[in-house]
Length: 229
Image 1 (cartoon, helix red, strand yellow):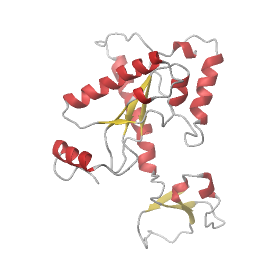
Image 2 (cartoon, rainbow, N blue to C red):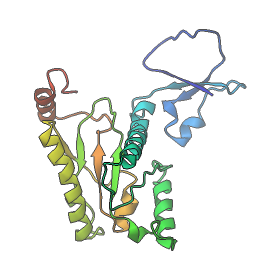
Image 3 (spheres, rainbow, N blue to C red):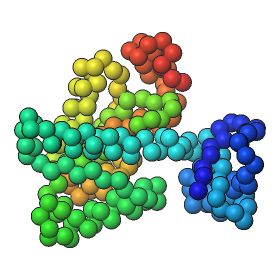
């Protein structure tokens, strides 16, 4: 199937005439797929972006691509004879149905909670790192701020999660990059938090509007014109 995005464009030219199925809002919601303008052929779809929900294929897939690159780099690193064997197993995961009540990650946690296979059990998990939407158009460098987590999350998990966030903050400071606290109850790591697994990660803001203070700070630290809106 051929997907083509038309972004704020009244017209678009294709190399050859093709029949199209128009899908509103990039298909971010189930309801969007019920309001397509179909043609009987299903070999082409035009994705028309609607900025109301700020949903973008590039934005949404950026975390998946970053995790793939991380996995490949780690694989090469672990094969190097000069690299000391790591104490812990690193597992990369991609969850489905995040915007449908996080069904994918909840399923994984439930399965890990009942398995008896060593290494796959929930109690074998040391921590979870979540990389969420790393290519937002109006980005900020968000690190999870776990002190505002619900009371149902144990103080032990909150403190451990904050230690993880501190590592990201220290790295941003070392590199001279701006950063902001981000709400820690947004994405696929939430089921792990409620299962007493410490979590940390970064989030680029989903394109939300920055405050004036943020814009000025990012403009100063990143260079004029990079402060966003």
